[in-house]
Length: 221
Image (cartoon, rainbow, N blue to C red):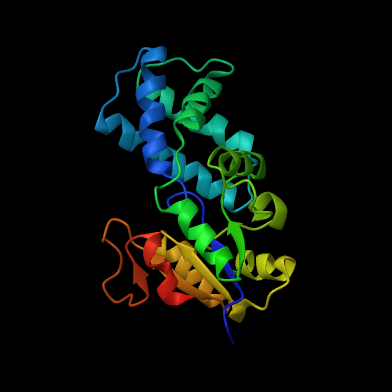
């Protein structure tokens, strides 16, 4: 079966989520009286992932996971939890969110090859579509999120449902993402083809379908 569509991940693949978090923390933390440090950043990431995992399992909603992140984080850095505090962080995060330099060209190359383009992301529908618009990729019409599908990566059902709604058989879709477990192994479990975008060269050594930039994606189309 030939490839008919490419299903991109968003954060870490098309957009620089990690860089945006760093920029947001450096801009937001001083406003609440906390100095930025790598240790504080690591604490934020650990707490965020813990509550995002709960959200991905659909045990809480997106607003609640944000509330719980602050409730856990702020006392540990000596700051008070006040209403609307997450809005400050989010404003810095959104302002700092950037597309990777290779993202727009890769999406254009896929479309130019006559293939369909879609995004499957674990973020909230409203936030992720906003990111794509600000990145200049708002023309991607098919954007699938847990809000739409009722399930999140790494559950293979997220891929199966996305393909079903997209109108393609899983075997005709290529998943591209930076998270090997979420975007590659889960996609393959659902019957898709998959390529690991390993920008940092830290992925599993046994993975043979690997690219270091999206410029190399044409090899697998």
